Image (cartoon, rainbow, N blue to C red; front, top):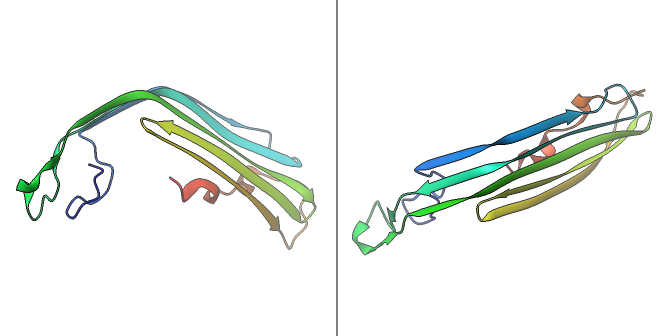
Length: 136
């Protein structure tokens, strides 16, 4: 249940959640001046939420949230990359788009990294997962 009253918890906990689709992950060759990593998935999802009292721990007789059923497309796109601008300077960034039933978000970020040792190439380990982890 995703209601935010006392006793509800305020987290996403549907009765049933179905998500089916197809996805593609990609990664350019490693050991070059740049690297790009990403994913795309598209599918269908259905979410069923049961009814719930407004204040389940204190006074359940006050009223309740009605049950809900939502279904529709589910899209997820993310691309990240790093470019070796100079032997010890990397420039990187990424963008993400997610769309589900009644919810969509856009996230983007850029970074500059200075390394003490000079580098000749970048690798997938140079792409930080933390660009989008705070939003998921």
